[in-house]
Amino acid sequence: MCGVLGLVANEPVNQLLYDGLQMLQHRGQDAAGIVTTQGNCFHMHKGKGMVREVFRTRNMRDLHGNAGIAHVRYPTAGNAGSSAEAQPFYVSSPFGIVLAHNGNLTNTSELYDDVYKKYLRHVNTQSDSEVLLNVFAHELRKEVSGNSDPFHLNVDNIFNAVQSLQSRVRGAYGVVALIAGYGLVAFRDPNGIRPLVLGRHEQNGYVSYAVASESVVFGGLAYELVRDIAPGEAVFIGLDGTFHSRRCAGNARLLPCLFEYVYFARPDSVIDGVSVYQARAEMGITLAEKVKQQIDIDEIDVVMPIPDTSRPSAMELARHLGKPYREGLIKNRYIGRTFIMPGQATRKKSVRQKLNPIPSEFAGKNVLLVDDSIVRGTTSREIVDMVRESGAKKVFFASAAPEVRWPNVYGIDMPTREELIANGRTAGEIAKEINADMCVFQNLEELENTIRKLNPAIEGFDDSCFSGCYVSGDIDENYLQALSVGKKQADKRPQPSRMEYSVSVDSEDAE
Image (cartoon, rainbow, N blue to C red):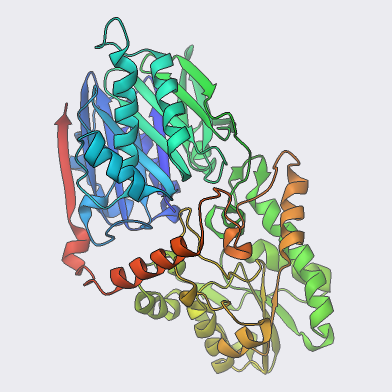
C-alpha cells in the first residue's frame, strides 16, 4: 500500500506536496519522493525513510515549479532494502515522464517481457511501478507516432494511451504522472480497487487541482474534495490549469478494497462516498451482535480498543453492549504501524515499544479487546500477553474484520498463507494461538452490507483476503504458490542496515 499525490497550481507546489505527503504517511513509511516540473525540466528528490527524514530545506529549495507529484512507499513488490525502489520513476522518452503508483500489478512478468523484449525499453529495478511507467510510455509513443506532428502530444493521445494500458494491465493501481511540458495525468484501475480522489482550490480566478490517494490531504492544503476518480477513468490537467477527463475502460465497475475501510485509510478520509470513520463505527454495531451470540456479556467488565484504528468500532461496540469503554493501552506515536513494517522480527519487537498498558485499568477485570483485524497474529499475541501481565483475569478478543485467510495480491503485503494466523484455523484455535480466552470475528456479509448501505453505488468489494475471490479474475493456485516461493526467497535476503536505510537519491533537472 502506498500514497500518491499530484498537484497543478498557480503557485510553487513543493511545500504543498511535502505537507500532503505528511498526511499520507500512514500509507507508507519505507520511502518518499517528490518530483516537480518547471518548463520542460523535472526536479526530483527521493530516498529511504519517513517524509521528514528524506526531505531537508536544501532539498525543498531545489524543487521548483507549479506542478508536481509525490509518493510514500510501503513495499509490496521489488526490493524493500534498495533506495532505487523509491518513487516516482522517470523515463526520458517520449517527452519525459515521471510516474508514481499505489497498488500492485498481477501480470508484471508478462508486461516485463513485453517491455524488455518487444519495446526494447530498460527497467532498472524490480518494481512493478517502473514496468507500468514503461508500458504507459510505450503506448504514448505509439499514439504520437500517428500524429501529423509526432513531436506534439494532444489530450486524445493521452487518454488513448491510458485506454490501451488498461486493456493490458491487470491488478490494482491508482496512478499520478507528469508529462514534461504538458501536465498531470491520473488514472485508476477498472475495478476501482485502489482509491483516488480529485480536489480543487480556487483563488483569484485561477483553479488549482489535486489528485490524491485519500481526501484527508485536501483539508490540510485548503482544497475541497470534488469527487472520486471513477474506476477506469483518467483525468488530465494541463500546466495552464485546463481540466479533461474520460472513462477509458469499458468494463469498469466499483469494487473498492475492503481493507481500506477496515485498516489502511485514515478515519477522517472519505473513500468512494463513504466516511471511513462512519464505516468503522458501523462495524462496531454489527460486531456487537456477533459478540452477544458468542460470549456471555455478563462476563465482560470493560471494552478497550487497541489504538488507533479500532477506536470507532470499540466505542460503538461498548455502547451497544452497555459496557464501560476505557483506554488501557497507550500508544507511542513515534513508532510506525507494525502491520506495514517489513520483517516479522521487526514487527514483534515494535509492539511493546508502540503500546504500553495501564495496569490499574486491567487488574482483576475481564477485558474485551477490540482490534481492526488479526493478520499474522504477532501483534495480537504480544498485546494479550501484556494485558494478562497487567492483571487481567480473562481476555476476550474481537476483530472488526473477518478472518484473514488468503493472500492479498493488490498491494497489501501478506503474500503467503503460511504467514496468516487464520489459515487452517478456527476462531477457537486462533484464540489459543494468541493466548486469548475467546476470539470473535466480524461476519463478511454483514461487513460488506454495512459499508454498502453508506453508498449503494458500490457494486461489491475486493474482499480477497477474507474470501479468496480475486476480482481481477487472473489469480489461481499456481499464482499464489509462486508468490509464496518468491516471498520466502525475499525474506532470506539480508536486511539493510540503518545507514543504508537513510540513503537518499537526488536527481535534478532531468530532461
